[in-house]
Length: 127
Image (cartoon, rainbow, N blue to C red; front, side, top):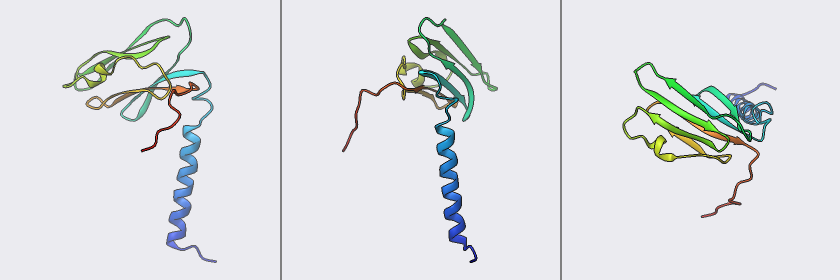
């Protein structure tokens, strides 16, 4: 039996879905209770495990165009202390501390989010 063009597309879509699921559910990335993940330009920059009593860290990321972002991480969560961008929405987001929360700086292409095993306070939402 010869494979048709449509069959090949279906196989490729299914393979991409399985690979995406494996990447998202990678046990190495979610081994701790909670961790703060920082991505720049869609690439993983740094992962910091949130532990009780951990030292406060300030992460300074410098960009080619002279802009920068300063992210503060401690046992309570993460927030943007200082950033060079027009609207500073990421700085106004404030502290994130629960799994699923995120800070996004679109002009600098930085995403900070918390992943882990925290239970969400929201069961589900329907509209």
